[in-house]
Length: 117
Image (cartoon, rainbow, N blue to C red; front, side, top):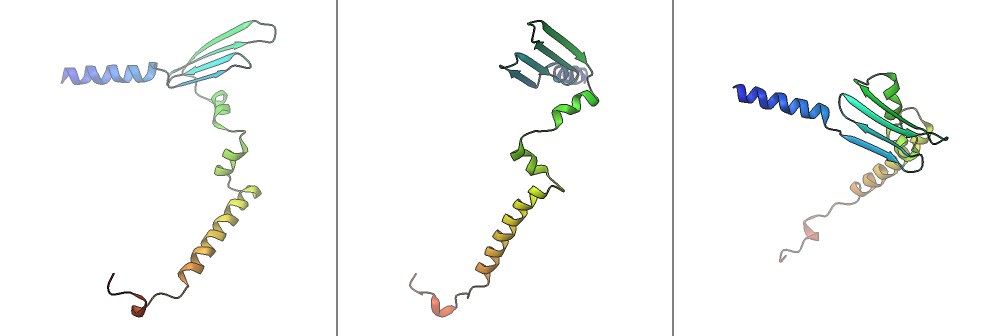
Protein backbone atom coordinates (compact mmCIF):
# COMPACT_ATOMS: atom_id res chain seq x y z
CA UNK A 1 0.00 0.00 0.00
CA UNK A 2 2.95 2.35 0.62
CA UNK A 3 4.08 1.93 -2.98
CA UNK A 4 0.61 2.88 -4.17
CA UNK A 5 0.61 6.14 -2.17
CA UNK A 6 4.15 6.97 -3.29
CA UNK A 7 3.21 6.41 -6.93
CA UNK A 8 0.05 8.48 -6.50
CA UNK A 9 1.99 11.31 -4.85
CA UNK A 10 4.66 11.35 -7.55
CA UNK A 11 2.00 11.36 -10.24
CA UNK A 12 0.22 14.30 -8.61
CA UNK A 13 3.51 16.17 -8.24
CA UNK A 14 4.37 15.57 -11.88
CA UNK A 15 0.88 16.69 -12.98
CA UNK A 16 1.28 20.01 -11.18
CA UNK A 17 4.80 20.73 -12.41
CA UNK A 18 4.75 19.55 -16.04
CA UNK A 19 3.57 22.28 -18.46
CA UNK A 20 0.39 21.66 -20.40
CA UNK A 21 0.31 24.78 -22.61
CA UNK A 22 3.07 26.68 -24.42
CA UNK A 23 2.12 29.79 -26.39
CA UNK A 24 4.78 31.59 -28.41
CA UNK A 25 4.21 34.73 -30.45
CA UNK A 26 6.95 35.29 -33.03
CA UNK A 27 5.85 38.84 -33.89
CA UNK A 28 6.05 40.25 -30.37
CA UNK A 29 8.68 37.85 -29.06
CA UNK A 30 6.57 36.77 -26.11
CA UNK A 31 6.31 33.26 -24.73
CA UNK A 32 3.97 31.84 -22.08
CA UNK A 33 4.32 28.41 -20.46
CA UNK A 34 1.47 27.22 -18.21
CA UNK A 35 1.26 24.38 -15.71
CA UNK A 36 -1.37 23.72 -13.05
CA UNK A 37 0.39 25.63 -10.26
CA UNK A 38 2.74 27.97 -12.11
CA UNK A 39 2.98 30.24 -15.14
CA UNK A 40 6.14 31.51 -16.84
CA UNK A 41 5.97 34.58 -19.10
CA UNK A 42 8.77 36.10 -21.16
CA UNK A 43 8.12 39.33 -23.06
CA UNK A 44 10.34 41.65 -25.04
CA UNK A 45 9.42 45.33 -24.78
CA UNK A 46 9.52 47.93 -27.54
CA UNK A 47 12.87 49.17 -26.23
CA UNK A 48 14.36 45.63 -26.40
CA UNK A 49 14.24 45.04 -22.65
CA UNK A 50 13.20 41.51 -21.62
CA UNK A 51 10.58 41.02 -18.93
CA UNK A 52 10.51 37.59 -17.28
CA UNK A 53 7.72 36.66 -14.86
CA UNK A 54 7.15 33.46 -12.87
CA UNK A 55 3.85 33.22 -10.99
CA UNK A 56 2.85 30.49 -8.57
CA UNK A 57 -0.82 29.71 -7.98
CA UNK A 58 -1.82 32.24 -10.61
CA UNK A 59 -5.60 31.99 -10.43
CA UNK A 60 -7.92 34.95 -10.55
CA UNK A 61 -9.06 37.87 -12.67
CA UNK A 62 -5.74 38.28 -14.50
CA UNK A 63 -6.13 34.77 -15.91
CA UNK A 64 -9.64 35.42 -17.29
CA UNK A 65 -8.20 37.22 -20.32
CA UNK A 66 -7.21 33.89 -21.87
CA UNK A 67 -10.72 32.48 -21.50
CA UNK A 68 -12.32 34.74 -24.09
CA UNK A 69 -11.81 34.78 -27.83
CA UNK A 70 -11.67 37.50 -30.46
CA UNK A 71 -12.17 35.02 -33.31
CA UNK A 72 -15.67 35.66 -34.76
CA UNK A 73 -15.99 32.13 -36.15
CA UNK A 74 -15.39 30.64 -32.70
CA UNK A 75 -17.46 33.28 -30.89
CA UNK A 76 -20.60 32.34 -32.84
CA UNK A 77 -20.38 28.82 -31.44
CA UNK A 78 -20.92 30.15 -27.93
CA UNK A 79 -23.36 33.00 -28.67
CA UNK A 80 -26.58 33.04 -26.65
CA UNK A 81 -28.25 36.40 -27.26
CA UNK A 82 -26.19 37.43 -30.26
CA UNK A 83 -28.26 38.38 -33.34
CA UNK A 84 -25.58 36.90 -35.61
CA UNK A 85 -26.24 33.50 -34.05
CA UNK A 86 -29.70 33.58 -35.63
CA UNK A 87 -28.08 32.81 -38.99
CA UNK A 88 -27.12 29.39 -37.69
CA UNK A 89 -30.64 28.87 -36.33
CA UNK A 90 -32.07 29.75 -39.77
CA UNK A 91 -29.82 27.18 -41.42
CA UNK A 92 -30.91 24.54 -38.90
CA UNK A 93 -34.58 25.43 -39.55
CA UNK A 94 -34.06 25.04 -43.30
CA UNK A 95 -32.48 21.62 -42.77
CA UNK A 96 -35.34 20.54 -40.50
CA UNK A 97 -37.90 21.74 -43.08
CA UNK A 98 -36.12 19.78 -45.82
CA UNK A 99 -36.08 16.63 -43.66
CA UNK A 100 -39.80 17.06 -42.93
CA UNK A 101 -40.52 17.33 -46.66
CA UNK A 102 -38.63 14.11 -47.30
CA UNK A 103 -40.54 12.17 -44.64
CA UNK A 104 -43.94 13.38 -45.95
CA UNK A 105 -43.29 11.97 -49.42
CA UNK A 106 -45.31 8.95 -50.47
CA UNK A 107 -44.05 5.80 -48.85
CA UNK A 108 -43.42 2.71 -50.95
CA UNK A 109 -46.05 -0.02 -50.90
CA UNK A 110 -45.79 -3.77 -51.45
CA UNK A 111 -46.29 -3.35 -55.19
CA UNK A 112 -43.16 -1.23 -55.44
CA UNK A 113 -40.82 -4.01 -54.30
CA UNK A 114 -39.29 -6.62 -56.58
CA UNK A 115 -39.61 -10.08 -54.97
CA UNK A 116 -36.61 -11.40 -56.90
CA UNK A 117 -34.16 -9.04 -55.18
